[in-house]
Length: 448
Ligand code: LLP
Figure 1 (cartoon, helix red, strand yellow):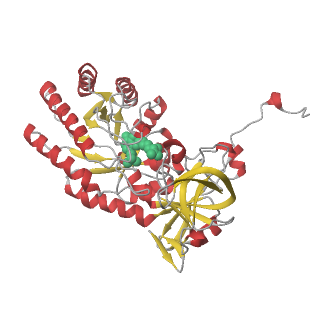
Figure 2 (figure 1 turned 135 degrees about the vertical axis):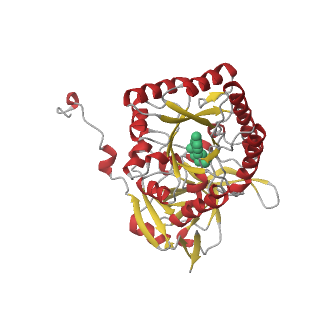
Figure 3 (figure 1 turned 30 degrees about the vertical axis):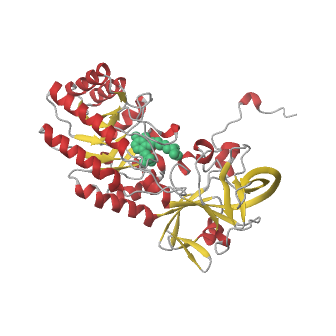
């Protein structure tokens, strides 16, 4: 989506330097064209190839009222994990029956909200949750469609904080006989819920198909057991999300790379069992929002610290040189991923896009925290105060994980499409940052 015209990077047809002037920095900029293209790819390669298939966009990766509208307009479903995401979706007019409610500790009032509004599915995460749903359905005279989230016991290759398919996990039901079968039986016999099937999500930013296939195999065995034990066929399988994207050198794979083998495996096993093929659902987040956005920052303080950076010279010798810290006007408050997962990003100086890289710098944020780094060892043209830095692929888990650490306001989000720009989330004001704060009466008056 980035294209350089006369030395200036344009994002989905919009001049990045002009966007920075108009909206200020830091600024998240999302390309509507990129988001729509991902949905179109999923429609073509998954939904249209498997009867009953659905895509439930994972709101946690990036969400706001505008994004809810984009997901709705694309005809997709939505995966929410909290009352907040659910309320945002409903406030945007997102059809409740297309919402799937995930989460390992859904609160009673969140479940009530889901049942009252008639969400499409609740993905039950533990035995107690079924009881809560039954009690709510009984009280409100409702029925609810449910799936069970299971942990298929596979270890996917990604950062430890974002793998979720292994047995030792806070998510889902482990596949232990004494845990899963009584729970399945309770759902099958319940007068308040329709038990549709199983859900698994093995992790995020994954590049291999094998763990998905292993997880699917484990769940297919569960399907067979359920049929043998209770004579009930599973109607729906949710395969989660997790498809990896390119941040720097990783090679993004098409959705078909992951989904084709799973569709084949599932089709073959259901045919073998003599069961009608189930509806399939995926829950991608990062692979839709991730590379659909960039973040723009203005460069401020620049410091060079001598004798602290070890690196290999062109002739392979270890050299100790200086490290240049280039600070931007945001940081871990708008992108905590480098600090939390050692995530690596790529970026350019937007106002010097035509110039070759000249120096290796550490781009850091403005928070009081040494780990507040945006890009380590970035190769950039010579940076100066006032330059505009564009960091790529910041669309997933950036804005939604933003915080007010150091009382820094959360940046604005702009939606761009083919040269048109519109604000989707306004920048927090200083007043917003203290809006929930009260001075206790006992602390009023008597200032010294
Ligand atoms: N479905 C479930 C049940 C999930 O837990 C997740 C992500 C997804 C779908 C979407 O996964 P995706 O397609 O986006 O990989 N904050 C971390 C990622 C946490 C992922 C949490 N669950 C990060 O910034 O890398």
